[in-house]
Image (cartoon, rainbow, N blue to C red; front, side, top):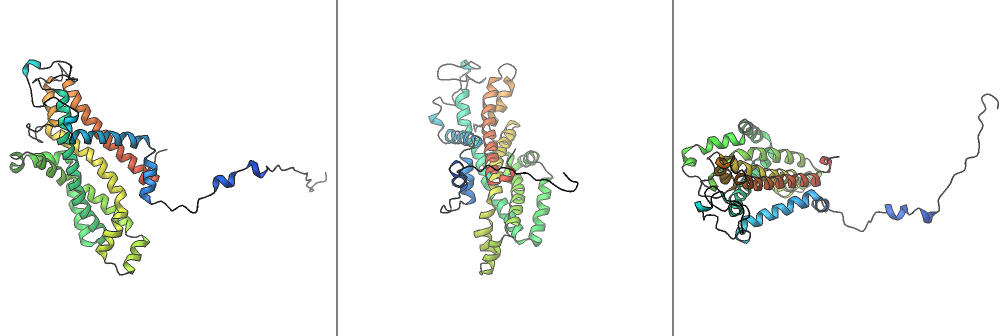
Length: 319
């Protein structure tokens, strides 16, 4: 072969028969199907996630226990007899008795109501207050946004539990302990986080094309905020609210354990954990069961929040 001259040779190409390559039928897009909304896509993703299914079933079980405790426990949780103190499991009493002779299983079942109520209503209060302030500040901006930013900075400087301890020591709260005083206390220190999350979501949504279109069609700012901006900002708000509900249940238990939360007359997991600490060395099971119920409930809400976050925001999915 001469220099500078490139030789070429014939290369055979193999082309598979069309019948053996059904790629066209596999990759074909159904153009007749209606496009799914964000929520429909999220639900289609959630219903096949084991994390969501397990957490949702556990939360449904906890809610049923809190609403209908009589279906799960036949014993009277307020009946205590010292003759049964610290006895082990027996027929009709699968978890044994406390140091005061109270049925542990019945108290765990009936204690779910107060703990779940505190978490649920605190979350609702935080959503209303924090969501309203955050949406207004994020959409209108200006001095309202500046004032909210300074207020939230002040609250963020004080941790939730420490702030709740200070508030619960005030005479008006210390002398009137109830579920509602705990809810108000936790909501006071919980709304700034929700306001900041809502503000960020609204700022991101208000620059969308559909917002500009609604304004150009003559819709007022407030109606645009309510009808278009807020509904399209709900994804991160729902995720934070789900996780926060579990956090508020833990906060109530912590305050009750310290003797600053619910009064002893109200059955809750926090009060039972506080009462069982004197039996920790001799009979740790008395403390273990309410603590286990609390841990499983809180873990379920956190798992649900993670699953919802992954479904609503595919970019946050792991791996």
